[in-house]
Image (cartoon, rainbow, N blue to C red; front, side, top):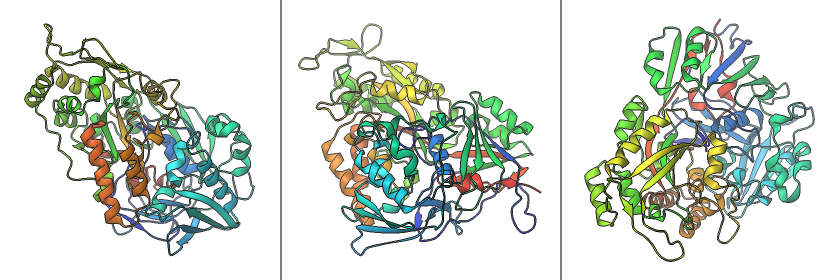
Length: 580
């Protein structure tokens, strides 16, 4: 979930798959040059952020800042880089893998890894580590490793045929194997295998950030110190197999007050802010010592409807017609203007604009029409009481509920990179015009808010499943991904208690999700993905609000920032350097 929720903060209209090592084009923020034919080395790069790292465990996290940190500290087989021909496009390149190939039937993928690589503790990093991580994730994919399982969907097993050769066997040809593997982190077997515990539970409960003295990494950085909502210090890993960090250290400083963060950037305490508050963008533009970077964004905001068919209260909110009526009285243009200062667009699909032509262009649009919405609610029998609040009629049967006013709480986390309360105000204003009253329930940080959504005893393996019965509506965000697979997966039954924030269950949708994952023909897969997005849209599992642009800023004393690589590449941290 960053804001929640997962994955990269940049966008691209197309992805080019290449068998190459790390590389890509450059996109500089600020000014400056290189000395001696290369970038300047040294200095401390301090980054201000309003998003925190909640965990360094790939099996148990929720914030996008955690994902970005894990890209920096763990090996991946492949990663994204910036296209040399178009700085607004991303290309897949090797990370730990130098090259790869696959069998004629597309079922077996072979990765050729860099030789003589080591973990941060000096022990050999080999294909055995990758095979173990993949096989262990597959083994416990319906439990403790579910959060990471999408990256190895349809994998039967992985094997190391020698220290630098990894072979991954799929149960069928997979059209997006590389895109999926880019989201997957390789772990040191010698540290993680002893943690497995009963049925893999120890894999999820391990908190690496609490054991920095023994924590083993293999990417561009190690973690020197960690404060969940404070300062995290990344030190270059001397055993890193790739191009090393230009900075002596990267310090991520968490702020609860965005105004203080921008003030520190303006005064030189910070060299970089990874997300400029939308209300501050125009002010930052005026600062001659700062450089503003604006790229297409992957983050979407939405109204999340509890769609659990077993929920016991306020079941009128399961009706797509009711949810559509409420959605038609949300002024999304007002949200764009007053919350995002114009740096956003409307969005209809669960996957967002980042997925390019894999985003269904035929959805909606959901129109702003309060008159039509009021008429719909009248026709559905939700009459206004003497106080103007509509009343849901009494129901009978298994989930019988007496007549009750249409008053609901909207749950929201504190960990947002935009003014969530102001966005809620716009939604509340619209609902009020329909005779529906809502109050804001700020449920704490992302971890606490997600716990409030799922419940303390959430268990998707039971029949009927348990969970998603303590809230009706939430307002949050999702950060999508270049390939739509992840976002399509979050509403599947398999993601109950892991990524699902709605509790929606639809067996037909789940079958389509499995099918798209093994459909190699891109046009056929695109049509399946479009149909899945249509289902989510028609059921109003979410009401999509806006797709944000991504805006960061840096002091001109540093250069070579690659904004588009946020949460996609180790280059995001390793490439900036001080101006001479």
